[in-house]
Image (tube, helix red, strand yellow):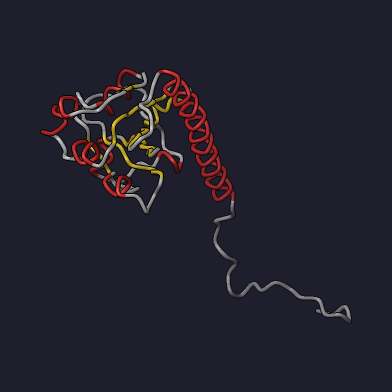
Length: 197
């Protein structure tokens, strides 16, 4: 089985600076077509022809509103394609060649589960099956949803921890003295071991 974790990046911030959900930034509470996603991870990460077709970790991905990725995120529901064939991948062909490449490499089943924590959609987990492995079914989808829920909770906890840590550091820095240094003619008095200054 192959898979990928893809996190949301707010499309407006892509023009100015990256928004890294894994580093404490807020997620989107509402999604629309054209949401930008950042590939956070994939498995296996190397040594597989199929993994080589998937966008590399760190790549920014844009999906049209009709794409399964976008639908899984907007609808906040899992998405299952038990059998992938030429008819199923035809609508995606006008947007990207990746689904057809994966199908030609033997990927025959796909499922996606949104990563949701505290009511926020953080991203989507994608699972692919190829070769002689059986097609995904409803039980696999239920397991994927459980895994996605646990992953979302871990990502959200890390995000919150990073935000709190950054806040604490900012507060500590703001409490450091920032007053002027003493004038040069006022030197601190040192006492020597003999008790004289």
